Length: 567
Image (spheres, rainbow, N blue to C red):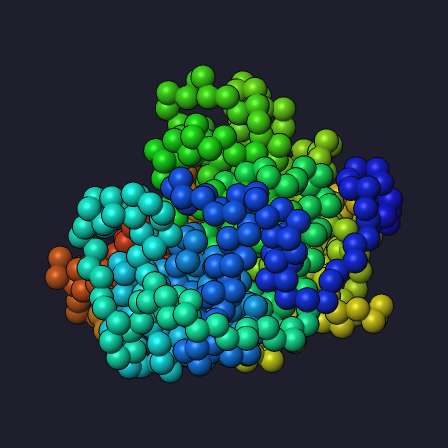
């Protein structure tokens, strides 16, 4: 069945979209012209209209130009969801620079790698993360560290109140040397306007996001303006519910394709309002839902599992919901049933709509239709995106119903991996039809009606709270410790995180797991492994199970943990 027919039957009225050849910032400016008085973002009650949001972007773009940042320069944004991060993202895009999006809880050694691999000339981060970045700056090519505080995104009395309350223990480093305060940078630009516009095409690199690709080694993914703009326009078309003025609860982080592509850029292209949430917790989740009454919630299965854990919300009215989207990991049939029942019991007229995608195509490329779903399916491809199941290790297309590797092609597929032609050639392959297809490393099936079903990952990977974690990478870091002989990392089923990370360690001959050695290994891990990827449990053994050819049999360890859970 063709994509046109699929969308006529189940989805959008538009099955083919015209994609503008422009920057992401230009589409935001277009939205500002159309909806100047609509609220673009709400940050703890501090609101900014689209007109003022566009002015902020222009001002920040001026400031960046004044400190010497220009087209094609790369700047790392090491931030949670704050106005400064969003404004900086679009300001960089406006002047043709590239935003390198990094998790602020990344370990020090990871940050060194991200900054050097991306060849970043500047970095934006919050005061509370500054010590870590200042320590590693001499080992990078970063010339300017731009610091800001949460209060920089607040207005009126909220600004000094934050400094007197939550912010009182967070030191503010003044501008000096390579350090520059964000607020001072903008203040100087305000008095000296400079031209910021650069000729920018849809094919220009706009952002770098990080993923393990098909081999499990973290790589920078080069994404273009067209990739992001196409995603936004496809999502608006496929969702059939994203409309101007309506509110998106932006819990998914800006350094994640889902958060940046759906919760931020799609919302702004549509003229919607983003509720920027820098830190998620179950307790704050309930308060956010009650206070803001968002029209859209987008998140990973962990977020929806947390929804079921909320207390004292029997009277919570969720009738305003128009879209509830789940991605980042497989949503089990049972969890979907529970969440749907939860929503219906609180007045919602919508169900969870599951999607599928990967950072190599920004995020979603497949979505459950608006008013129809097949149990266990991840939906149908986005408009102008085509899926094909191929035999593993080949480009040979398989018939409907036969399991193979999921491949896809369309306008959101990445330009490639940064400075890694070999990995790029493995992921992006030219097929006999003359099109370049993205090989996902996932197994799946397409039925005769065109619905896609995810089966399992070909690559060994753990997904915890929506983040992809690659065991081999963690094992390499842990085995770098002088006391460790060998290590095996696995994912253990977890009610909240979906999987939690556990490390099995064999020490070098003659050593035993004393408190001193355990503390040393833990400290080593904290310096080299991001907090979200840190093993929750360490188990020390004399030996690890092996396969017949001598490899560590991680599947046996997984089965042992499964037996513990069942018993």
